[in-house]
Image 1: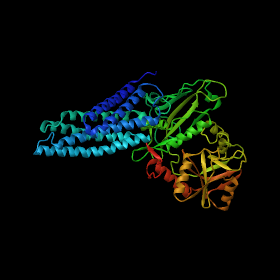
Image 2 (image 1 turned 45 degrees about the vertical axis):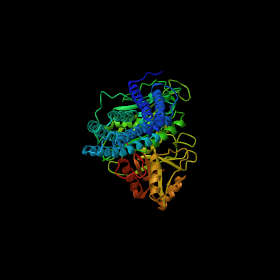
Image 3 (image 1 turned 30 degrees about the vertical axis):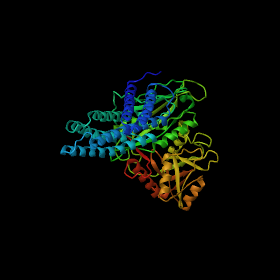
Image 4 (image 1 turned 180 degrees about the vertical axis):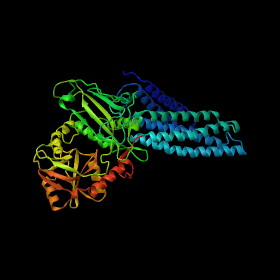
Length: 568
């Protein structure tokens, strides 16, 4: 059995308190026939609480499924609320029944009655918070905000309740033990709040086959923080923040030991398989600091899902999507002060997985390292969108159908360097790639997806298995269609593009990707022929897409698609 941490003991103690509270509730229900049904409710709550208690302390497989844990927490929370309301109803019933109040009523009695009416109103408000929290737990949503509001409401209800109970006990013979009962209810819900606010397993219900203790992220802060670069001289990929996230995989154990540590070089065996056979994948995404001082991620789950798709192609174990997102958010939040605030700047996020087995031989590895590093980056277009010159590559190919073109693997990018050098020598910024079989159909532009506005249609190459499914590409298609444009995903040949340019029906062309967002194509260099597109000016569609996407990413434009996610 693994060593139980202090945090586990504290959490188990809090759950134990909830179980004791439920057991006491059984007696309360039996003593008061009016609420005897709550005895059965508390029995169920007690059993589920005990199961959860054992799960925290024992690395067993039972009750490890995420839905089980969510339902257990949901029932326990509902029990906390039910008992709280029962105590409120009991106190209110006793107050007006004449058992503790002697008629005729005095002014003090009326004040007490008004006080309990106020408490009842607060209880109704509290019901909404509990219901919200309960639904979020069952749906696997983040519970941080709901738990915070619940704590505030509990505090606002607890203070007048205790004061009123003490005052009633002295003036009108209010039942003092019931005051203690109300106090116990408050302690119970406070314990729930502590669990929900502090324990990542419950804030992010991601348990599958892993044990709870394995999925807690350990944090080691740097003792030597770096000096931050000048915001006007960031470039792209030149600087890295103080911390990084790391997690290891071993066959038979799964992904284990998630941790955030100071940024530092890896200790890697020279025989590590990633160095020899290229079994590695990566992703690219950004965190944006808006003028409202909120930090946003743009469609992060899409990147994580694509990382898993890439991993599947290269026989790399899958990551849990929710936990991976949680890890990225924790890292971004920790290094939040590294996010540049100047217009167009952002924090680039690079998750990657490498095979770490010290072994020479072609097979899938049994050990992997998953890591996330962060880099503050400058504006891709400091002076605004600027069309670029594109070199049409007709000798080399980037990928073929059946290969790894649809995966974000390092080998795909290494294979493009030769053509990129040739393009640079011809004064071009990027390469337009053709298909690897017939060498006639357009596939990608550099590391981006291509779009061509021809006539009344906007055409982008269909995802054929050799083209990376870009997140920005997907977003552009959805934006364009929502705005009434006709977007066609199909094979488009270089000859069709050139013919449209010569005929004047090629209105504009652009590439889409994480780094630049939108990159207008101003010139196509095909052999010795130069094709000028839209007078070498940025087109209306490209400019509109850039404004919409960056507006959503930085929070300047309303996010009707719910693509962004705030980092708290």
